[in-house]
Length: 390
Ligand SMILES: Cc1cc2nc3c(=O)[nH]c(=O)nc-3n(C[C@H](O)[C@H](O)[C@H](O)COP(=O)(O)OP(=O)(O)OC[C@H]3O[C@@H](n4cnc5c(N)ncnc54)[C@H](O)[C@@H]3O)c2cc1C
Image (cartoon, rainbow, N blue to C red; front, top):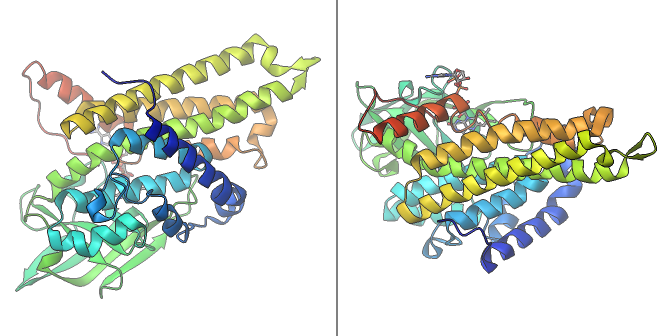
């Protein structure tokens, strides 16, 4: 069972993150969003708060928190600024957690400690121009040359593809579909360079770029885990990542809801606050009810992860429901603001734009439904053919 009461530690995390976000992030949001500026310099500050190594054990420089704690931190950050919360979610759940789960002792010393402390920024590059939901069809190739590997290929939509100090790259190392291996590649390695920085609808404070590998030579000691294990590693990493995106969705929706509720008490039409009209009051009631359902499902997935190490269908259900809920709630927040909701000066239009990513990144809603359905059928002994997804 999930304990619905926040622990003292979770309350402290929520308050600390909210205070930091209100002081260091809130005054800059409009400017950063407008300029599509990714504030990489914030990472060191967030590192001091433990936000860059949330679930990494303390011996490796992390905060040693549980997934239940982690979701609280991401929700609190997203409530103020979803773009930076996306960056923190990707840095923690994808790049850093990949090394935490599968890195060698040497790799943990060299990479995990600076990543967890926020001295380094991490990126995780799976998606390619012709390979998204069908992640195992990726084309980037790594060819063995003595004690090194030569990598060639193009990754797209990589969060922190330009600013990262370490990029986890997935490459084909054999001729079968799942012959995929993960490599850590440090910034400045010859043959590794960022490509185009994407201009985006939302999440504009989070950097998204291409990553280009041209005869990029890396030592075998930068290979993560065994040859051919990369795809399985990616799926395990995404299992935790999706809980982070569910938390991000809950926080994004809460941020929009708070603005809408406040506005409903201030805006007067027909001689009274619009919140006194049942049509608006019912929208607020539905919004908050849905947010709480998504929050409980996210806690359920986090608890599953903490207790069993694998959240499976719970992570996908939380990600699916919370992200689709965030689209409905942020849209309703605009409706409650009327015309002002459509104007940049009011924060709800940004929450609406940011929320649009959530049903796509780390596996689309359609892919989550495939994963959930597959798990449900497996429970009665029916195993359909494998699906692949990112
Ligand atoms: C802002 C942003 C940040 C990102 N960050 C990262 C990152 O850091 N690292 C990384 O590796 N990737 C990242 N991604 C990529 C993201 O994970 C992919 O965009 C996502 O997995 C979908 O892949 P795709 O865009 O190729 O869409 P496609 O796979 O081409 O899907 C197109 C449509 O077809 C549907 N579809 C596909 N297959 C099926 C099926 N079998 N059944 C039903 N419907 C299907 C999809 O649901 C979707 O609606 C990021 C993307 C964005 C936009």
